[in-house]
Length: 222
Ligand code: A2P
Image 1 (cartoon, rainbow, N blue to C red):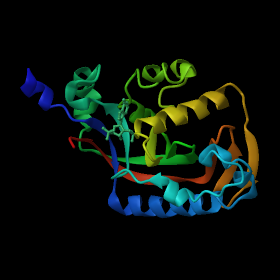
Image 2: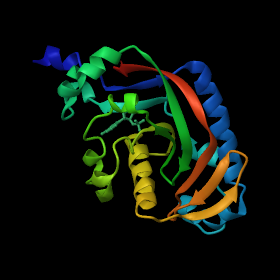
Image 3: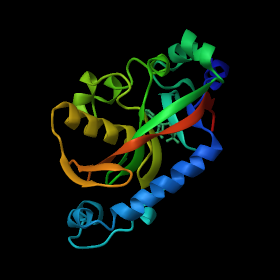
Image 4: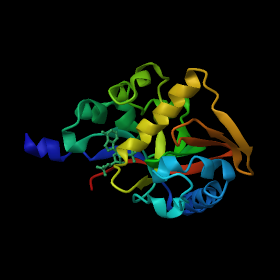
């Protein structure tokens, strides 16, 4: 019934506490500021601008997308496949409202999205949908064979006209390349970590010290 559908949220996920959101925004903005000044980045800026040699201001390029969170299940108020089953999983009802420590292990930038990779613990994987990666296979064919949790991320910003669902797909592309043994091009050791270029405007910095982010497992209706 319509009433039952209304009782399911837009999505479930881990919502980062506001103090750590501020810290992550600072760290990630500093990273963007540094990245777009690197010669190696400028060399490939055509991926972002469509024009060779044209400078790009990444801080302006990406628009923030509301409160920082790591989506577990997109339910679309019950319209998404498997939404009801997910909402009824024992782990989901048991952990609803509980506190977690999320580990942000990398930041990545593509011409479409800016995000943070989230490395899930065994316990956190209990809340991860079994089909989260498989579901992305039409967009990223290799995704179906990637380990559970490969898609886990926090969207930090999107380019004009891009929806946040793209961030997880961009991450899956990079993880697929890593799994295929493509090392990427190690560009620079930065204070934050090692910066790697994966081609086609895809950049990833593996954080020397992962960011530990307290978060609440909950849902959003808006
Ligand atoms: P993300 O988790 O990458 O941030 P929207 O505002 O577009 O309705 O999306 C609400 C949240 O659900 C966003 O956080 C978004 O992306 C995520 N999301 C949207 N669509 C999907 C989808 N089809 N699959 C997985 N997550 C989605």
